[in-house]
Image (cartoon, rainbow, N blue to C red; front, side, top):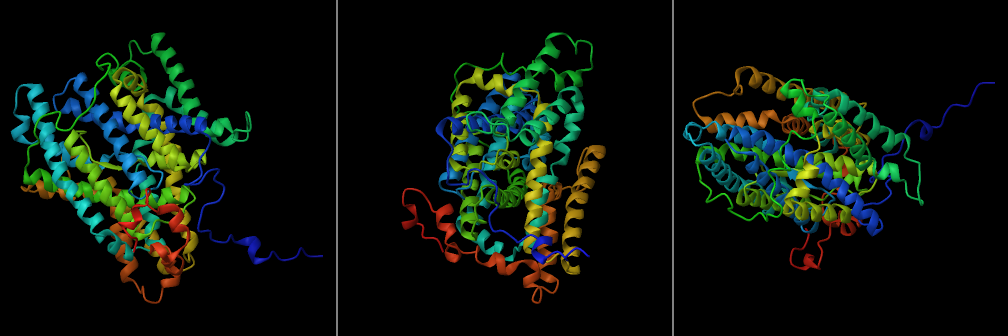
Amino acid sequence: MAAPAPKPEEISHPAMDQLQGLEYCIDSNPSWGEAIALGFQHYILALGTAVMIPSFLVPLMGGTNGDKVRVVQTLLFVEGVNTLIQTLFGTRLPTVIGGSYAFMVPIISIVHDSSLASIDDPHLRFLNTMRAVQGALIVASSIQIILGFSQLWAICSRFFSPLGMVPVIALVGFGLFDRGFPVVGRCVEIGIPMFILFIVFSQYLKNFQAKKLPILERFALLISITVIWAYAHLLTASGAYRHRPDLTQINCRTDKANLISSAPWIKIPYPLQWGAPTFDAGHAFGMMAATLVSLIESTGAYKAASRLASATPPPAHVLSRGIGWQGIGILLSGLFGTLTGSTVSVENVGLLGSTRVGSRRVIQISAGFMIFFSMLGKFGALFASIPFTIFAAVYCVLFGLVASVGLSFLQFTNMNSMRNLFITGVAFFLGLSVPEYFREYTAKALHGPAHTRAGWFNDFLNTIFFSSPTVALIVAIFLDNTLDYKESARDRGMPWWVKFRTFKGDSRNEEFYTLPFNLNRFFPPN
């Protein structure tokens, strides 16, 4: 007797508006003790980027270890403030607003500017470069402020479909592949144990409970970082790296960052602490490209965060509101002098998924930790001296998780359509391939492929094409809106997407995205 044919519902899975299987969604909160521990975990994770960017840029600018610590503290302080602003008045999604790598290209170009590079006194060069970067950030922030608060970005987002967003969101994660294993490989004896331990705790032992709390799954990051950090410290103290090359020592040792010794006990960052910003049209123009890139990367990250917080996709005007506030965040970065603009921290979005806690309160608590520890210099510096290889090992998991959330939007599209296969494949491939060409070219020639006499033009092009999600957005949105789009609304997933475009389109939007303190009276959603 032949086995009965499987029913259609046994073969395919129904599409779901909200991701299931999360313990706490955007509005539900764990107990205070658990929320504080989870908030601390998000703070520790955000340290990776906050330390990495100044550690790379400050020495190039002629700054000392003391300058580096001040920039790290300032960056953390502004991150905390921006995260609070974003979770209260912006998109209200549980996203940490961190430093952005997108600003590296224009900032390095400012560092190498002949008028600044020719200053002999290193401290003076550092201060003048910092002021030039601040001026460029202040001017460039206007792009996001205008696009966001004028609702222009909401109008642009009418051209997005689930199909067009898949490569963008997925490459927000995949596009960071060079921050993952290539960095782990610099110190394999720390990186690989960290990677294995994090996966074992967060996945294989996730059902282990203490007092009805899946403690290993929730705090996999904190536990594995503590274990591996102690192990790295043992290796350092026992002299395992004494005669190894400098690069190995920087990546493996726990005492090489020189942060703790040069950190003050208490120091409160304040606006214009480096002096008055200087303004240069060429610098500002290059920086504007970075704010556009940060805008696109954040749009993808917000959509991923909404999914991992078990919320509905943010309506167009909420997304635009968030971008406007993010522009204010870049303005603050310029005023305080953080050496980079701000964008959604992709690794923290991934952590929402691995802990299965998408609670907004947890992120607000982590912002509190950032502000608190940025003032207490020595304590902040202690946590900031975790070797970067440890963070890179976790990135391998968390960036992948964010990328797969992007892929999950394919469930609303028809993947048996040749048109959709073509658009997805080409956008993905170019989104990975174009920035890789720009990266390789820059590593060999020490300048980007765009190398004309107009420095601002070079910065603009090189910044745009260095970013995977930006290339993917340009390709996917162009193809999706020009290739027989009239007939293919259903294939693109538009019938599903349409109800989330407006605030009133779905009753759940009010629950997730309404402003606090009854502010919706003054800013009525459209």
